[in-house]
Every structure is written in C-alpha cells, then in structure tokens.
Length: 629
Image (tube, rainbow, N blue to C red; front, side, top):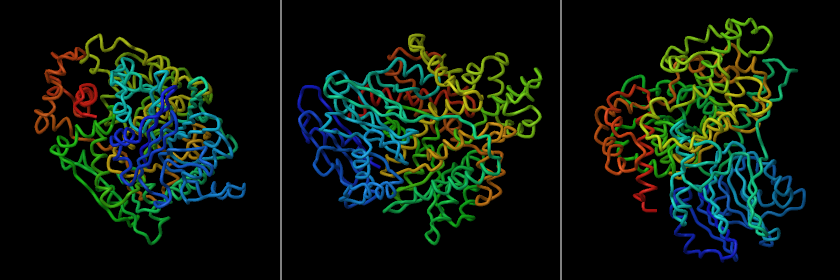
C-alpha cells in the first residue's frame, strides 16, 4: 500500500527529483517507509512506500532487467506467489520476493492483458520505453484510487488529488460534480468535484501513447449476470463459504502484523471469524468503535460477542464531539473531496487505533452491495411485490420476491418510516429507474439550501439511468446492486482508502474478491434475495462460524454517529462558524437564509448539515487554499 505520482510531458523534459519529492510530501502519509523516483527525458515516476511484502526488496519505482519497463504501484496482488511460480516456469527471473516485480514480469509476458491474471487491489502506472507508452490500470472494484489530469501537453496522475493540485493543477469546482454531490453526496462516473481532474474508473485501464499524446481508456472487467440454473441453494451456500475462506486466506499474506475491523455486523464478523480460525495459534487483533451517547449509537457489545467466540485480542475506542472538532478539517483534507456519510469520522478514529497495533487490517466493506444488505432494496422490492400481487403476475417468475414471501421480513423496516414516507409520497409503480433514483436521492431538503445557479449542470439523472439500465440487467435486484457497486461503493471505498492511509495502514477487503462477486452475480435472484431476506446467502454460509446472535440480528445500525445530537450542543458553534461564515455567504451558491435554522430543525439521521459542512470545509481547504498545499 503506497502513494504514487507521475508526469508525462508531450514536448518538455521531465521535472526534477526535487520537484517530485516536494509534490509527494503531500501523500507521504500513504508511504512513510520510503520514497523513490525515476526520470527519463519527459517521463517522471514517483513512489512513497508502505512496506508490507518483502520490506527489504520492494523499493519503487521498480524496473525489469534491462530497465526498459518501469512501474510505480499502489496496492497488493494477493495471488502473487502463484503467478510468480507460473512466470518462473516460463523463464522469467526474479530479484525480489515482492508482488510489484510479479506485475512487471506479468506485463512482459501477457502485455496489457496481465490485469486479468491479478487477484488483488491495485492502481499502477507502467512506463514502457520500448513502446513509448504509459500503461495505467485500476483494480476491478476500485479499492485503490487513481486520479489524473491532462491538458494536451502534460499528463499527471496520482493516488490522491492533493498531489495533482500541489503539482500545479488549478483547483476549481466542477459544476457537474457539484450537482452529483448535492444529489448523492458523492460524484458518479469519472467525475470529481475538481474541474479537469478525473478518476480512472474501476475495472479500467488507460494508455497514453507518446506518438500522438492520445489517451485511451478501456474497460477490461465488468459484472455479468449469467445465471447458473443447474445448482440448488445448498450448492451456492457451500461454494460461497469456500470462496470466502480462500479470499481471507490469501489476504493474510503479509510480512508485517495484521488485524481486523469488527463492527458487530455479519460482514466484518464473518471476516474476523474466518481470519481468526485460519491464523490458528496466532491471536488476531480486532478493532471496534462506538459512542457513549446511548445504545442507539453503540454496537460494541455485539462486537465483543464475536471477539469472545473467535478468541481475538479486542480493542475499542469511543470518539467524542471534541475529537470531531479536532479531526474534522484534517479528515476532509485526507478525503480530497467529500463523499459518503458521517461514518467516515468513527472509521478514521478506529483506523488510528488499529495503526497503534498493526500495519494491515481486514474489513467487511462491500457486503451490503454484493449480498443485498440495504433497507432500500427491501423497500424497492416491496413495491414490486405489491405490483405483482395486484396484477397477478408474481407467479410468472418475473419477480424474485412475492408479496407472500416478503411479509416475514418486513418488520426490519420499522426503523425506516421516514424512508418509506418519502418514497411513497409522490405515488407508486413508476418506472424502476425513477423509483430507485428516489430511494437513493439525498437532495430532498438539500437542494433548497443551494441557489439555482449551483444546480444548473444537471446531468446526474441521465448518468444514473445509464448505469441503472445497463443492458442484460433484467432483475430489479441486479439493477439496484449493479448501480451501487458502480457508483456508491466507490465512494465508500474512497473512505476506506483515505481513513486507513491517513495513518499508513493497509486495508484489505476480502468480500470484494472478484471471484465472490462474479459468483454471486451468477446466482438467480430468487435464491440470493429469497423472501427479501437481507444477505440470505452470506448468513447461511457464515452460520457455522459466526455467533447466532449476529446471524439473527435485525437491528444492524451501520455505525451511526450522534452528530445531530451534538449539533445542538458541543458542535453548535463549530458548525455555525463554518457554514455561516462570511466566506460561505460570498460563494453565492448557498441559500443563507435557510441555513440559519437548519441545525435546529434537522432530523436525527438527516444528512443535510453533514453534506453542507463537508462541502464548505472542502471549499475552504482546497478552493480557498487554507490547506496550503
């Protein structure tokens, strides 16, 4: 896990090593163990290293034997041992025992198709002086970040946007990105909140050809929903357990201490229990966070149940409002651009705790998207089940869930009355894309806080429809999870990456092993979302190793933060000073008259204040220059 940066100039020579060192100081937190630089004519590569595998031999940028191929790489190739053996048999020679060198030789052997052989998380750039090309790639799900900017004369890339700004890319607001953020509290597609800075999409590779200085982006992987109709539910459960165990097993490969996040939910509990059993006599360290503001904000008791059952070394932390005030500006700095919800704050705190004990941590990110774990999926299918019952089409096999089968699971929605009221207040049974957009649209109450000028670049709904209505997606549950995997999951993975790398901590996410994702996509919806049961397959696969209290939970909270409670007390002055500042009023994008009463009227779990607070801190830090990059 590291920080990467590079520049390729069309005509001018590469920048100096001193310039590269200065720029990469902004991402030194990603790689506190070492640094390296490569320059040649008009190409420069830089690397900040967090040494996990082969600490002595894995220095980067790294080259092949004749120094015609150079790489700067962030991430981990988990199947590097198997690939190394395969490449040795094909005549390749290795000087190190690290996964970086495996990428180089795989590129020599398989060309750009090498990415199809990797099981891991990665963002890398390879300079091939023979072909006079820069080849860049990002892993299938986008666990590792890759940002770039190209003005026709220079191409710059980095693990984090702040390095691009430090290198001279002017920080300006993207109107389209801002509209996405107001709608979802993240941007979709290759956009960012910064004008002229893009992200390489997950499952994509990028090539820059020096001959004409032309960029081309190609998708090398995507989700495919080709159903396996030959096997039964028992087979799917057994096969899933095997894949889960192997995904955890290969992610335990490390030359430094490792541990696991543990929230008390099924996702992280499954990972922690599998890791603990695979490590045998080695006692796994687990890390949990909660809040002492009432039981509705504290799940640590469930985490302790899992820890006792798995025999882990348990560590916990309880962040406070004072911690929030101290950490918030720095947290937005690390994030580059605001994304996702208030859970980033406790996640940041738990990562800080984990780094005091280990250098690698396993987590359960991705379980909700892959195994159908969000309440909105059940709400969406409740409407479909009603439709099928009224029109008497439910028995035709069109719906994965019927009204009769979904009823036993509806009590889970007791805590989601506001979601149900909002979803149905403007009618029923519209087109599926419009209905799901309503479920994930966070602009209710948010748009009113902005001036009409801030909402002019309205491309968001069209881009949403393009993803949601991707061809070959016939089932509603696949449409919903496909969009979330492609759009909202990358925002959560941005949080995963930034909160861990802020402390030089490598975070690994076994549930996003591409073999698991492809396997689950092949399972018919009527089995994987049986009766509208959240994470039906995962719970059945994990019930032999995860405590019953976790499997049968109906009240998983998803790391709620008592921010709205704090807004009325400890944070009132802090938040007002940011969103009601003269600088905020002068931006001309906010409806300042409505902002004044916002904190007094916001509901317990509303995210309007949070969304504006993060956005304004981002403006102050990056656009106004307070972060002094």
